[in-house]
Image 1 (cartoon, rainbow, N blue to C red):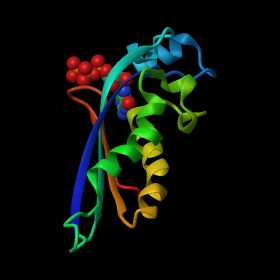
Image 2 (image 1 turned 30 degrees about the vertical axis):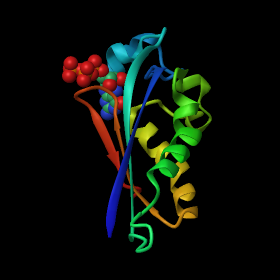
Image 3 (image 1 turned 180 degrees about the vertical axis):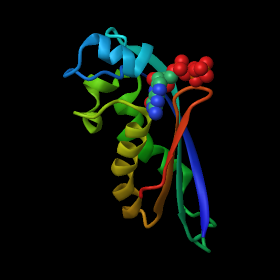
Image 4 (image 1 turned 45 degrees about the vertical axis):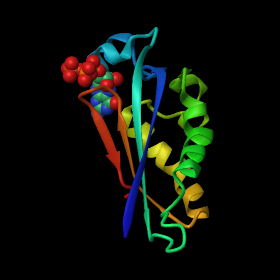
Length: 137
Ligand SMILES: Nc1nc2c(c(=O)[nH]1)N=C([C@H](O)[C@H](O)COP(=O)(O)OP(=O)(O)OP(=O)(O)O)CN2
């Protein structure tokens, strides 16, 4: 079993905020991440797939194909967007790093299965110091 990883980057705005709570309660729970007028991050996204190497090509999957799948289905939808408002796969979800990573995994899993490789993990860095890894279970 071989693992291969592609990194992509995107910039996006969000806030951690529940509409059914007061501004004060949001501030108590989410701190400055609840700022009503949004804030942004430069996200680093690491997508890892696993499988067997094709003996003819030496590839697990063509990295150019991996790039295209990630760009078309994730990055083009989130880059320079508002995650709370603009992103279909984040509709009605809290825009935490955990939830974004899980949602990305759910979008990409079947697309890589079509290519006969298995999605192993999503690693999403929201800041230099904070990141989430999701393995699908
Ligand atoms: N469990 C989670 N906790 C927090 C999340 C999250 O997505 N999941 N998100 C945030 C904020 O949006 C943001 O990530 C934190 O910003 P900040 O504290 O500025 O992060 P830094 O790494 O830059 O902070 P340092 O304290 O300077 O390391 C908060 N919590």
